[in-house]
Image (cartoon, rainbow over all chains, first blue to last red; front, top):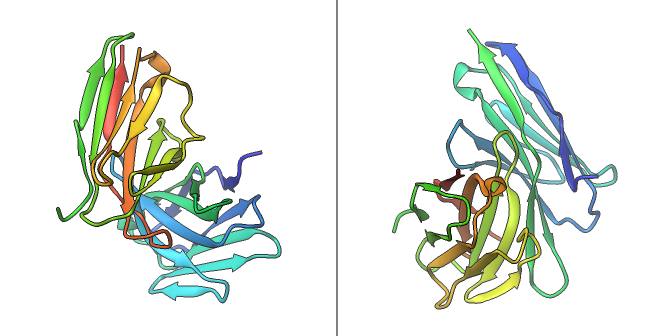
Length: 113
Length: 113
């Protein structure tokens, strides 16, 4: 089983739709969580951090459920420019000070006109 | 520099050749990661440096892969006797400290023929 698992996608949605992505992680010692966005043939870029209380940034809402080891991303009123691959990322500190940032395989979103 | 710089951006190697990929992180960034991203997959962890110390190299797929960061700034990922399965994008990322979000470089796309 992979450490970070995401919806396989792809998701094809019309403009204006609401779409939700899910992610689960296996290491209960994980400390911080992020969603990254990756456009085709580009590097991943931070979309938002995910906090236990849930957080919102405009049309984007991220939720974390530590008990279920589950992270979600909700995109409201989707735009054509939201088309990208969304990567769930989990940060864990192992023994000593080694830091592990583990990525899911990504979920591809295409917003259709 | 303003961002993480990687070179070369594209590299074509014949099977069996050695390659060296360079990463120039943001000045002053302590943490540096290397990731391998195959087509359609999320980035897979290779190795992590904190300053010049390589704290985790558990993701390096074989002893043909070697990474160094001798002065705690520029890092080089070397792949010896390249194989076709080494074809991927190699991403470098850095952050100011252990707890900060990563900034990625544009990647080095390696194609092994």
